[in-house]
Image (cartoon, rainbow, N blue to C red; front, side, top):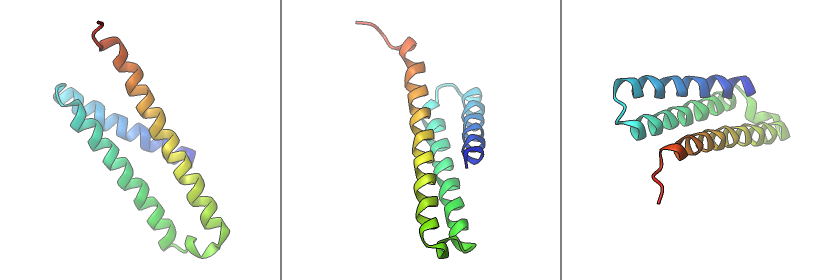
Length: 94
């Protein structure tokens, strides 16, 4: 799962960077668009897991869901932290 989230974060970063190169004034739509894509891909991954029979495994299903969404929110939190830390040099003082 770590590889999945690392690949997903790299893909959304690449999409955001490409959209920023096209028009630097549209950071917010590019950023939120990549977040929506990441959310849809993640939910699709969970639904495919359930469709393939993962929901019939009892406690393993809850362990999968818990670890999946824990990692999802950790990666999302890290991304938000990195965006906020990179915006600090550009904020106006006083």
